Structure formats: C-alpha cells, structure tokens
Image 1 (cartoon, rainbow over the protein chains, first blue to last red):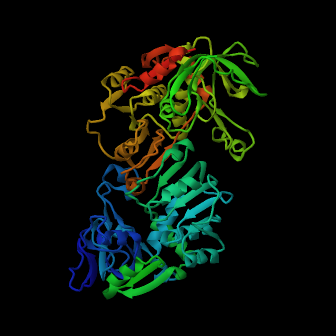
Image 2 (cartoon, rainbow over the protein chains, first blue to last red):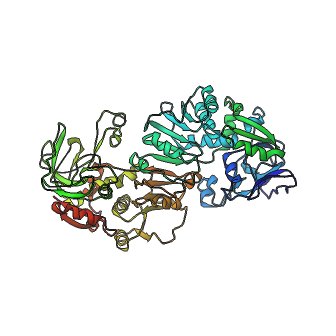
Image 3 (cartoon, one colour):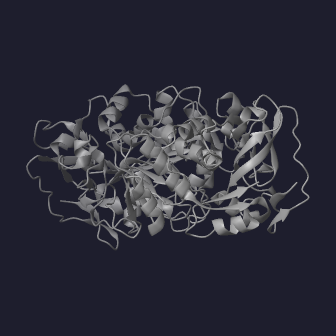
Length: 315
Length: 315
C-alpha cells in the first residue's frame, strides 16, 4: 500500500509499504482523510525518536469487526489494560502503551492502519470527513475543560492562534466561555474574531497577573513564560506545548503567586465526536489545503509554514 | 535599637538602628527569638533586591494593642484589604502587599518590629519560644495540605531534608500520612527516621513515575526535574523552591504525563500555632544553634552551612 513514513532521516512516500497487521482485538481501518499535527512535524525533524508511518489524526472506514463498513475515528493510545494506570482508570497513561504514528505503532498517513477495536468511535453521517478528521485534536482541546474548572465570568486567555489554539477557542465558545486569544497571525486572529471572540496580537500589552486561566497552546518554549506573566495569583495555566528546552525560564512566579500548572495531552474521542455532531464549530476555515496521500511529504512541508493551520491528506 | 540589616552590599549589625514606626492599625512587637530562612540567605546574596532589616520568622511580645504583653507570632504579608486579591479572599496575594523582612518592610532580626495588629496570632503559654519561632515556616508546610488532596494510602515523596522538608515531614506525619523523604545529609535523614518515617538518599534509585504526590522542597534548581522524574502520570507536584534559573529543565513530561504543578508559598499562621499547641512535632532537634542579636551576621553565615538546619537569633 501507499504510506508516508519517517525513516529516521527524512519523510518519504513509500508506494510498496507492507499492509498493517491486525492481531486479535485489533481491526484494520481504510483511512479516508488524515490531518497533519505539530507532533508530525517534530517527528519529521527527528525530535521524537519515532520511525515508521506518520500521522495520528484520521477518519476512515472500519474494514472488520463490529463497526465494519462504518466511518470511524480512533483513540491514538493503545493500552494494555493491565498496568496500574489502566487499572486506575487512566488508560491514556498506560505504562505499556503504543501511540498511533508517534510511538511504537504505524500511523494514519497510509491507505490502511490498525487499531484496537475498542479505540474506534463511529462517526454520525452528518459529520463530513473534513470535520471528523479534527476529532483527535478537538478531544485534546476538550481535555482542558475536564482538568480545569472554567466559568463564564472568568478572564480566560488562550495563548496561540494556531491549530490547537483555534480548536480550544471553539470548544470554549461552545461551552459558553469568552476567552481572549493571543495570536501572531492577522489571518488566524481574524478567524477567531469571526467566532465572536476577542483576539489580540502577542505584541500588544496585556495586563499582567490578571487572567484567571491561561491555556498555553503556542507550541513554543516562550509560551509558559508568557502564561506566567499573564496569570493571576492562584490562577491556573493549562500547558499544552511539550517543550524540552526551557533555557531562561524563571519559575519563581509559579511559587510566589501559587499558580497551578496542569499538563494536558490527549482527550476523550467520544466527547469530540459528540461535539462535532452538534456542528457550529466553524472548522472548514481552518483547512489550509488538502493533498493526496501520494504527496503527503509535500503536505507535511506546507504544514510547517507559519501561516498554515490544518493541512489534510486524502488517502 | 540593635538590628541586623542588608545594606545592598553586605549583612551587618547596626547598633543604632531607628525604632520601627507603627502607623494606625499597626503595633510594635518586641522580638524574643527569630529564625534564619533560606530567603534570608538569598537576600544576603543580593538576589531579592531588598534592603533593610532582615528576618521574617519570629516570636515576640506585643507592646501595644489588644494583645499587649502577650507572646505573638505574625503573618508576614501586610495587605491593603482593597485590591481584587484581598476582596477575593486571597490576602497573601495582595497586589500592594509588603512583606516582613523581604519586601518593603523592615524585618525581625531586630529588637523591635512593627506589623498590622490583624497579622498577630497569640501563642499559648505551653508553646516555648524555640517552638513558636517555627510558626511561619510551619504554616508554609501546612499550606501544602490546603492546596493538594492528600490521603494515607498515597505514595508521597518529600524532596529535601532541610528546613522546609523537615517541617513538611512533620506536618504530614501529624496528618496521618506516610511520606518518604529524599535527602542528602545522613544527619538530617536520621532526624526523619526518628519520626518513624522513611528517608532515602538522593543518590539511591527511586522508582520513576511512581509517586502520587511529590513535594519539592530542595531549594535548588534541580528539584523540579527530580520531581518530574518521580511523579506518576496525573500526579501532583507541590513546588516550594523559588528557582529563577531553569537551564536544562525538560518540561515535556509535565504535559505528556498530565502532571499538575502547584506553586506553594505562605500558609495560615493560626493553623500553625494550633499545631504547635498540640506538641509532638519534635522541633528541638532541628535547632542547629542560637546566637544573640549582636551576632546575627554570624548566625546568617552559619545558616548557610549545608549541615545546618534552623539557626536562631535571640533578641
């Protein structure tokens, strides 16, 4: 089959890639549409130690099992069900997990992939592929609302107008919240304003120590420092960027102001599909381009452009 | 009066220091005994930008007001009562606060100090000076129990066997918890074991990603990295060290493991006095030495010794 992989050196399209195997409990899925995420770009730069088929955001058609022939999305964490984290009800933190297209498991930039049947969530007919493909990052945005107490009267700041920041803004709006999005791109900030939300440029002076909640979704090393500048004493920062380099970061305000920082990663796929089914998320303007799988390497390059939001790959 | 101050260049004892003034709402306190804290050492190194009389841990005798002639300890945060933080019920985060011996207000290494009367908490007769002087850092240890959900069945690790780590261990023991203390000094770890708690050397291999709660009380830049290594996915780190230099710190595990980091600073003085009144905290072994106020500069030097725990200054 055709697949786009990172071989440890470069991203390339392989036209003779082996079909995925589906051991007991797993099913194969014919990928329909996949999305490029910042994590894919980091893998492509060799930052994550992963080799194999890229991609973890997808909508496809189940080829077997109880959801055979139905459109599905899937939880990317494949878990053991046995370890202390699984038993504790925290399967996304399974000690022995593999992760689709990220860690120990071939991903979604391919004609077909395999996942545990339990990971699949069916997609209602009324949700088009170009919305369903957002389920995984949408779940990651929803996750914040499960970790942090949020209320309409709060002053909430979302740092970042990119892929994730846009989705967090949409989820928060759907929950009746009124976040302010801090962005860098005039075009992306305009998308936020079209939602009826406030968007301000990162260069503009924002009041320091005033925000009740700051969602850090910049994807950069500076994000946490900015969040610490904006958050009020006893406020909360939801941290989304997996930043390995924190040179120059001053964490003293975290202690002095008794701030809470909550790391936030994957979220509930079923809740994401339910939100997609309600519509009204204005996802279509987030699609920068759609490429065929045979040009997945070009799609990944385009996704690295600062003005790109979501680049899709059609299998 | 006699006072020990940092003049921006060095620590010195001034035998002709002006008496503190007590504006309306404040009362003067004759200091009986004061304790040296790591913050004092940082100020003495010029790290905090404070000039004036050092010291914020004290027990003294109120010279006026409703507690006249009674022994008192005092909350070190002097607040406006008007700002949004005060109105929100977070006076320790008052936007216009001064802090005894730390920020904008002369401290306790002196014959007399002044504090708002509302800050003073009377000390029961049965609590000796050498216990009451621990009220402020004890409150800081108690604060953790108000910010983090703690339970006896949890695997709790306290990083640091110094001043604060020892007090956190005592507070946790008093709450029926069984923390493991990670230390560096054989003598200090022995003090922990005498409480009936486990103490292990920092060099020993501890299981990674296993602790439900890690209290970071090392006072060093490495503490948070170690805490991130020890804490389990979805676990909690209580961060006590105000570290401005985080070079080389990898915060990716915070996001990937969805860890919560809670910054923790000052605590409730009334709760600290209540705990002191119950006794049984084994504080006396924590006293390394007691110096007269005229030798406060020597006391501060001794407190900087790695084997020192609490050095006291008698006014």
